[in-house]
Image (tube, rainbow, N blue to C red; front, top):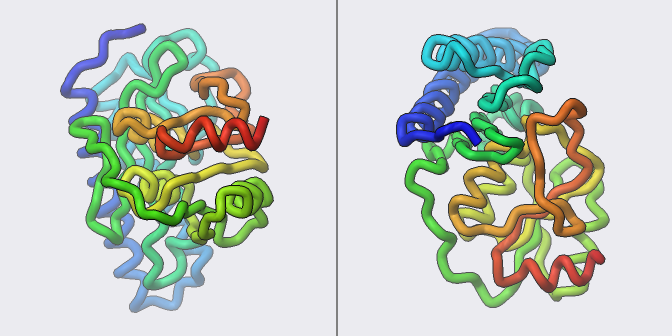
Length: 249
């Protein structure tokens, strides 16, 4: 594994925060325009991508970048340090005035592991990161399971029913995972597929905070793969991991 330094963690947090500020400005400026929501999302995606690529390339010229908004360069498979970014996670929510469940993801994968990560929730003025991770607070009595706001999620519904939990509905994958880190939820289970940029930064941050992260069968999540598709994901409080994995397997 390549050497990871304190400055890498600081950079990820600062970069995600700066991209978040840019996205807030774009959305605010759009309120006084006639732009359609989809156009606002496209502009946000593109400009956040451009900013993050500029920041990463200017600081880490030898590192590779994998971005949802960029063309995949296979050279990343030949290097050990790869920045995996989602310039705007939850574009649908970003385009709806007043919604806060969208995010910016900045992660650094090394040796196929999420070594560094930052998830900025701009509307909440909060950036979670691996720089100074904090464990979730004590749990509530009732288990809270996160469901997608717009897509059916049978696995979350199944877990909630089996554990006598409460379903919470939310947009961005980053916002969902950070809800577990912040103690606002207990379990985030996803099926139906994501891509590496959807969960690399959230997994890095959650893992650093002492939260369980894995595939739904309990196997580790691996990044900087030739195929960037990630079929499923589990982010949950560590004390619930065994119960959830037993239910699913």
